[in-house]
Image (cartoon, rainbow, N blue to C red; front, side, top):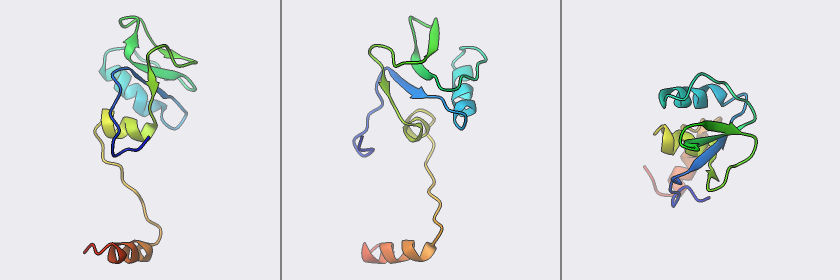
Length: 100
């Protein structure tokens, strides 16, 4: 999906991985769903069946998967920071784009 035109679906889900589970779990806890650290599940929001479940192995009907970057940006409202190993490349790009 092009992030410039991305719109968060009303019913979305995200894959929970070992790297992302704590951040996703914090969100789930904040929404009052309990204390679970699911790995390799699709975490759904709003919760499926009026709040009786959120973690499934597959995407449930009517839900659309979002990426972790989209989750951070559109759900948690975090700005994504890109680390640059070689600042000279960035400087050249900014000059090429006439950005000062």
